[in-house]
Length: 419
Ligand SMILES: Cc1cc2nc3c(=O)[nH]c(=O)nc-3n(C[C@H](O)[C@H](O)[C@H](O)COP(=O)(O)OP(=O)(O)OC[C@H]3O[C@@H](n4cnc5c(N)ncnc54)[C@H](O)[C@@H]3O)c2cc1C
Image (cartoon, rainbow, N blue to C red; front, side, top):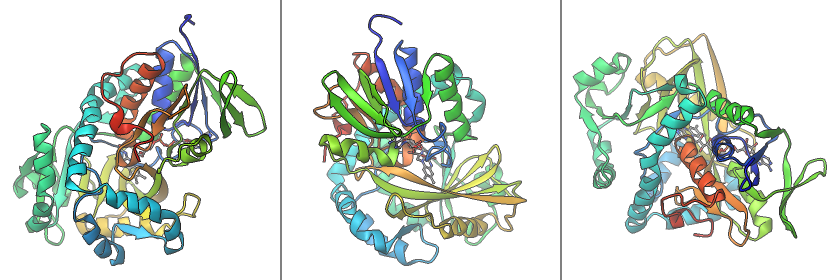
C-alpha cells in the first residue's frame, strides 16, 4: 500500500458500489465494501441489462404530465401510483414536474451526454479487467413504436439527440422482419415504426457482471462485510460508520452507493437528497417459445424485451410506492400479457418475477461527487433507469475524486445539493 493510499469504505454493492470498489482498489487504496446483501442482488439484479449510451433525454419533459392520466388509468398501463403512498411521493413528483421545462431538458441531456460518451470505453475496460466480457452482447437495440403518430410525438427527442451527435436509423418493416422475425406478426405489425441504435449493448446476466466486478475487487485486496450501516457521522478523526451490531469503523473516505436507501444516510448529516424509488418489475420467461436477438423497447407501451443467458426478460413499468411497500406482482403479469401482443403465443417452461427500485432523481441525473459539508464523503447513487449503463463510469469518477485527480468533466450538474 503506497503512502497516498486511503482507507475507503464503500457502502452498497450494486453496480455503483462494486464498480467504485474495483476502481479504488486498482488506484491502490485500502477498500472495504459493506452491504447486508451479496453483490448485485438488489436493484442491480433484475434490470433489463441494456448499456444505453444514447439515453440522455430525461423522463420529465414538456407535455409528459398530460400523458400521465392515460397511463395511470389504463388497466395494462406502464405507470401506477399506490394511492395510499401518494402523500409520501408527492414532493418528489412536484420536483419531477418542475424539472421538465424544455430549457432544463436540454441542459439535462447535455450533462448526461458528458457521462454517456465515456460509457463505452469504461465498459470495454472493466469487463476485460474483471473477466466479464463474455457476459456482454453487442447487437444494438430497436425502439419500436406501434404507430407513426407515436413516433412523431417523440420526434423532438431524436432532434435533440442528433444535436448531441447521436444517431439511429429507421428500419423498413422488411429489415425489421429480417432482424427480428418473431416480431413480424401481431396486431398492427404493418403500422409499426422501428429505429435501430447500434451503439447499445446488453449484458446477458447483469447480476453475474456485478458479482464478477466485486469478486475481482476482493481478489485484488478489497474486504467484504455483509452488514448494514446504521449510521454515518463525523468523528474528530473523520468519517465514522456504525454497523448493525454496534461496531464502529473509522475511514478516510466513504462512498455512499446505497441506491434508493441513500437519503437515510445523508439526511441525518444535513443533506436531504430527493432520491425517489421508481419501481420496476420483470418477468423472466425460461426456454421461451418465441424470442428476439437484441433488446427491443416497446416505446408505445414503455417496456423492454431483452434476450438473456437464462431466457427472455420482459422488464419495465413504473410504480411509485413507499420504499418498504410490498411488491405488487400484478405489474409483472401485465408485462407477460402485453408481450404476447408482440410475440404471439409466447410461452415458457417456467417464469420468474422480480421487483426492483430504481434510485431516481427528479431530473433523471445521478448524484456523483462530494456530500456537501462532509469532507471525505462521496455520493454515487441516483442513476435511475441507467445505473447499469453508468456504473463503470461512476466508479472511475469516484476513484479519481478520492485519489485527488481531476475526473475530467464538470460534476456541477450532478451535485448533491442541486435541488
Ligand atoms: C425493471 C428495471 C429495469 C432496468 N433496466 C436497466 C437497463 O436496461 N439499463 C440500465 O442502465 N439500468 C437499468 N435499470 C436501473 C438499474 O438497475 C439501477 O439504476 C441500478 O441497479 C442501481 O444500482 P445501485 O448500485 O445504485 O443500487 P443497488 O443495486 O440497489 O445497490 C444498492 C445497495 O446498497 C445496499 N444498501 C442500502 N442501504 C445500505 C446500508 N445502510 N448499509 C449497507 N448497504 C446498504 C443495498 O442492500 C443494495 O445492495 C433498471 C431498473 C429496473 C428496476
